[in-house]
Length: 459
Image (tube, rainbow, N blue to C red; front, side, top):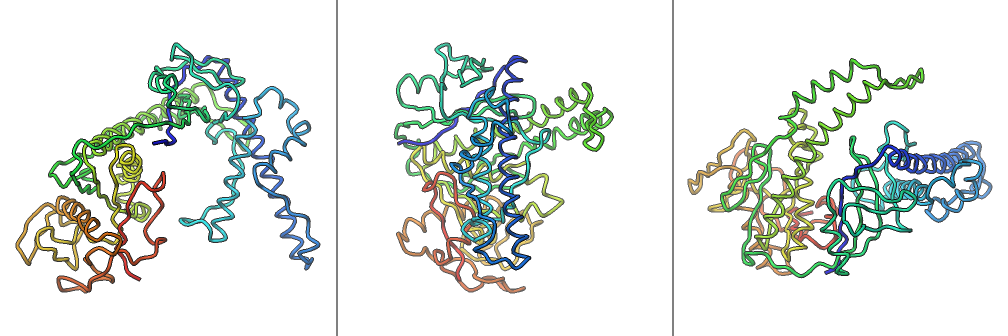
């Protein structure tokens, strides 16, 4: 099975190498801003001419914003725009132009209705201080040295890794991997290199090929499994808030940059900013590490995993819970499960966000009309079942996999309501999962084909 995989390693750059990488990142920013200014000037000119009543056939000719067209225009103007262009790799300028071409396409597709999801805004100019330095290499010499502690990139030369690249080197030596590109990026105060690799992965099967598990994610507990196991929420951001507050206040007392007067930041401000960045990076690394360990264990053990399609964007609108929801990383957990189940020969079933997993009794199937968020214990008035709310939801998710298997290509057994429930009463009208338009089921999962989506909302 061939798949696209990324290998990310930390770098230990010398001051001279860091200046070279920053120069390449600056070159990408210059090319992006120049091309954006050119596209925007033509669009503004055409919009102004339309207000004068000029026919469309006599407007200023439009320019193409595809990557080949932008690259051709840049090559014609780079001698005047950036006389120092020969000091940087051509891949640096291509990085900025490619980012702009993608951004313009996403904006145009979103505006014309070709792109689903939230509206995409028009691209903005990249700031020197606010933009994360990044440069991508797709051609030239890109390799891992035999000692597995150094990499070679075009124009940057031999860079030392902070950790061994043995996992990637083994695949390259065996001929089961091919490097497609390498991206150097600064996260906080640490530089990383990420290799995009085409990997030939061996076919694998889960440890328990007949196992089905439902995963109910939340804030109090990160994940409650249908097996009764509970994964506590580590709350890394909450634990680090006191230190982050201390470092933020220390940074505010230093002399920082001022764009209005052109004042540059002091060395103490820069050191304080680096300390704050490292603290934030540590929180992100701890969260990512915990999610990887959980999702890897689930994908390797269970053949079928059922999760919910949560409206995380809507949940973040709750200002009292937004920080805790963002700290849990619910979307990242589902994203990792999507590709790890594919790697391990399993499948991921995503229940529709309207499926009443918490309101449904896992014992008799009765659906409650109302279930307040404060009710942490589920009480069924029909069969008398008393069970933890999250455990009840995980059992309902696990049972949903059986309905998908028995239903085949047709709709699964109807459960739940197709409209807002009444104020009183137990169950509302039934609905037929599988009849909703695909556009109402959330975002498309990464690496298409890794999930089976259960549509549970009727027209």
